[in-house]
Length: 76
Picture (tube, helix red, strand yellow):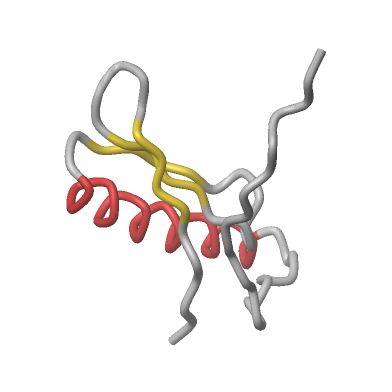
């Protein structure tokens, strides 16, 4: 079983959208965080299945670090 980092974003129109940095192009959405997480799990499984069908390598995440940094705005 593989584990992937996901990033959950609030959607402008409401709800949430989710991306998987290790699997470019793999994303999903949901009205709640729980729904978005269930949907991205399904999207990841389908994404991996498609990669395998096309004989493409399946990326395995290793030591992905997501953090936050504070910066001062540039003065005009």
